[in-house]
Image (cartoon, rainbow, N blue to C red; front, side, top):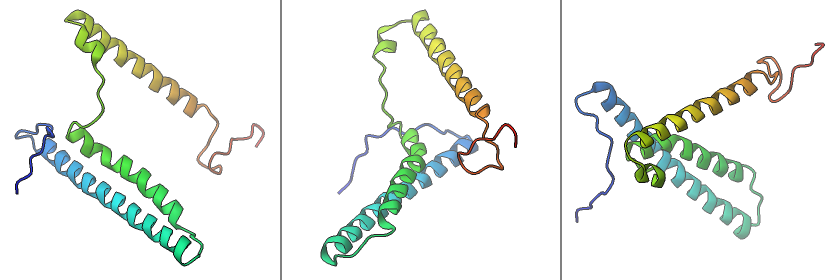
Length: 141
């Protein structure tokens, strides 16, 4: 029985770099799926250990949390390749021509400003590579 996919993949054409990135994104998607399966198996094992054997779970909760977070981040390129990201474009569809272009410039400019502010706050926070994670540099040390 043949399955039909409604996903529209990004076009790569004859560009070798784009084909390489598409292949890498597909591998990332498979790795992400494997992480989700591993998290489900570990969760089932954790439930069995906890409620059937009345034992304690030492590492299972942390492993599941890290696997799900990693699966989310590693799976992003695959979702982007399939164009499966959530896209709310009611305002751009309502606008035409120059208004749509100015909205694009406005959102791009605001994005650059937000990234610049985050970079400025991050670089001026006083955290140096030699300190412990999250510790601030002391002014006299």
